[in-house]
Structures are given as C-alpha cells and as structure tokens.
Amino acid sequence: MKNKLWLFGIFFLVWACSAPEKKTETVAEVPVKPYPSFSPDSAYAYIQKQVDFGPRVPMTPAHQETKEWIIAKFESFGLNVSTQDFEAKTYDNLTWNLTNIIASYKPEATKRIMLSAHWDTRRFADKDSQDMDQPIDGANDGASGVGVLLEIARTITSQQLEPEVGIDFILFDGEDDGELENGPRLNNGKIWWCLGSQYWSLNKHVPNYSAYYGILLDMVGAKGAHFYYEGYSRQYAAGILRKVWENAAKIGHSDFFVMREAAEILDDHAFVNENAGIPMIDILDFSPDYGFGHYHHTHSDNMELIDKRTLQAVGETVLFTVYQE
Image (tube, rainbow, N blue to C red; front, side, top):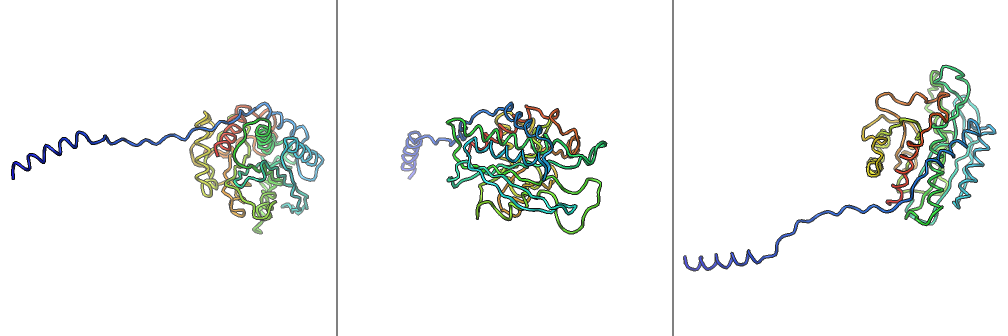
C-alpha cells in the first residue's frame, strides 16, 4: 500500500509540472475613437454675433433677428431645421409668441443624442444695482450655450470624420423670464421659468421622439467657470453625468469639470427629464459654495466675461463625448 502511494505521488508531480500555466485575465481599455478639434474662436464669434443683435428678449426685433440668423446658420451646415411656435403666458400676464428651434443631424439614425441650450435673454437685470429694469446682454446666460452648439454643428458637418449617432440640437425659447429676484412670488403652482422646454417636453417636435440621453449647456463661457454635479442631473442621469465628467478628465479639462455635488437647479433639463422621460444632464456654472457667478442676471453678463478657454473645455468635452458613442 505504501509503495502504491509513492508511485501515485510521482505521477502527480509529473502531471503538475507539465500542466499549462494559468493565465491572468486582463481587461483591455476601451480605445478612444478619433474626434475632430473644437474651435473656441468660432464659438466666440457666434456668441459675439448674438450679443450684437442686442438682448434677445421675446417679442423684440433683436429676438426675431436672432431667430432668423440661428435658423440660417443651422441650414448652412446642411442640417434639417424646423421650428416649434407656441404661445405662453409670462408671470406678469403678458402673452408671448415663442419659438423652439430644432436642427437634426442624421435624422434617419435610431440612436440619437439631444444637445440643448436656451437662446432668449432676461428682460431685467434684477440682481444688479443699476438699470435693474433694463435687459441684459446675456453673453454667457444664453448666447454661450448657443455659440458652443453652433460650433459643434459646424464641426461635425464640415469634415469627413462623422459621429456614429444622430444628433438633435434643440434650442429652447423663453427660459429666462421667471419672477423678479426680489419681487413677489405668485403662489399658483405655475413655474414661469423654462417656458420653451416646458412646452416641448409635453409636445415633442416628433411624436414619440426619444434620445439615448441629452446634454444641456447653460452659462458655459465665463472666465473662471467650474461645472459640478448638479442635483437633477444626479437624480435622473447619474451615469451620463459621470461619463461626461470622466471624459472631460481624459482630455485634460478636469480643472473645469469638478467631481463634486451641487444643488438642484431649475433649468430646461428638469422638464426634459420629468416630462419627456429623456435622461438629460446640465453643464452649468453654479458653485456649491457661492451659487451663481457675480454676473448672473446683471449687466456684467457681457462679452468681457467670455473666456475662450472655458468654451474650449466645454465644446471639446461635448464633442468628444458624442464621438465616443
């Protein structure tokens, strides 16, 4: 018996030495798909053009001229452009004729990304100490988001490198006309901000329209801007939020995109998430420490505030994200 065990031991030793070595599995990194460069100079010029029209307050000549110019720019890029005209009541009982502008790239594609901003400006500088009853330029609050999206649209249609997804650029009207900062609050359950996204989210431009996700740009051009994990974005689209911030870090923009939580901000994305059921994040200059920047709803929101480095960080991050889909 002892002899047989000895022979078995020799056999096992030989088998163990000749057995193939177990390999350690490694997870390969997902390769980065190529993407085109973003021009902050071009985005800046688009912002300047909007500001040159004057404050884009609904029902004014500047508002109408800006609308015609935006539509013409999207059309010049070869996109399918449509408008969504509607009436809305303001908090002070005005009836406004408003227009959401929709420009579609690869309308036949089933997988779609929604990129949005608002194109109107506030008719009061109610956070200022002077000329509080006058409209603001809205270089950052309105024009910066539109400028970045116009440059993204120009970029993807002007060279051979194409994203694999369809893109809908949806610019909302009537976002910035809520009640006065220090005025009375109308306790009737009505939200007076974000009139365009409220309407669109309940009356989509295409029946049963949906998108894989959406990105909203609001106040994305100021000097020293920082973008945090906004509250509604975390609630409705946490995965998309992390992906975009991680993408920003991959391409060197983590100093702008800070991985830190901030409060919920009522903005267009809230209605896209809640009413339309499309997960949308908000890239927004709002700090968990001090809130909005000093320029917010003041006359300081002019072209002197706009920084091309901020435009580069936001535009390149969104462009990179779209091309990785």
